[in-house]
Image 1 (cartoon, rainbow, N blue to C red):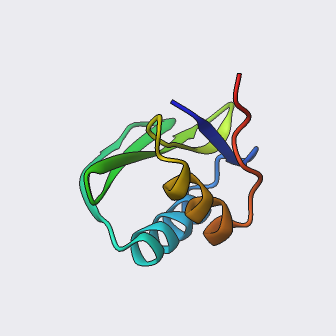
Image 2 (cartoon, helix red, strand yellow):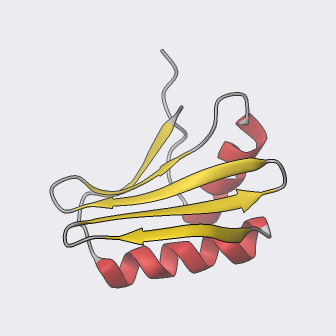
Length: 88
């Protein structure tokens, strides 16, 4: 599952603004929002795909995109102005 690094800083307000951009820009809906003391995992359903927006206190904010969803990954990159994930 490709990972896109959004921010090296684990900012909860920024996380929520990224979530709003993804929800509106991709036309998805939130399936699950799990919040802990230093982590957040929010699953966004877009069509038949589920993306995961993740915040980790020591790692920052990232988005996990399902394999074989290059078009969705490109849309996420455009919406958030980030580089595409590297492929192995």
